[in-house]
Length: 239
Image 1 (cartoon, rainbow, N blue to C red):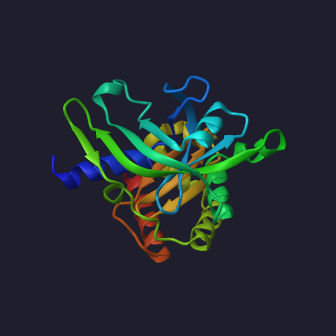
Image 2 (tube, rainbow, N blue to C red; image 1 turned 180 degrees about the vertical axis):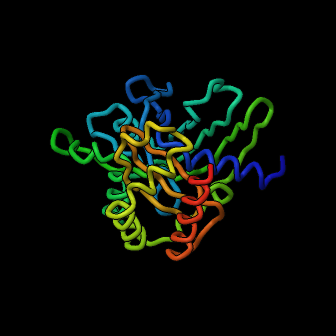
Image 3 (tube, rainbow, N blue to C red; image 1 turned 90 degrees about the vertical axis):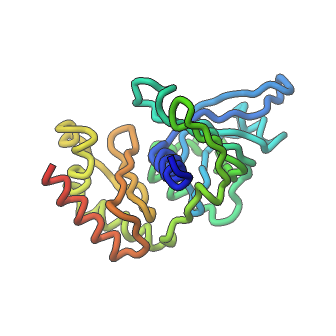
């Protein structure tokens, strides 16, 4: 497998995962790693964003030492060791600028989290990637740098919000079509909503999960997104 193929496979995995195991350095047990399952989405630069309560153990750990790792993998795979997984080594930091953009993107992926602030103090944190370990299966082991894996979202906050609103207002049936190859006829009972758009695909919230639907080819403008969605609809109807 060429380096470009490795990068493409690793990036595709990152874009299609929405939860992982966050490991931090324990305050209660100094020197020991502490693992916790967290949902995440990517910010506009491509770094993972997590929402954590200030009473959580990993909050206390990160507040004392920002070093962390996030392990992501396809949890639907029959054989986890034979499939791809990523260990993202990162420095965690509170999001203090462009908070509204990060929050809205996170809440579109995880709308149930909007109410969390009513009971506990929660903060959004960015996991700024430092290095990535990608295992594409047995023997396929690679170190990657953040610049190799991350591709900034080509759309501004306003552009993405406009596309999301348009799809959620007028194209629910089309989103069901996009998900049908993944979910089968059960998709007819779901009310999908568009959670995000980037240059390589869309993220659709349906039921309790988020699903990644890649574009036929990368895009850079809203017009190209419309063309890609039309092409996806044609392919879904033909399949």
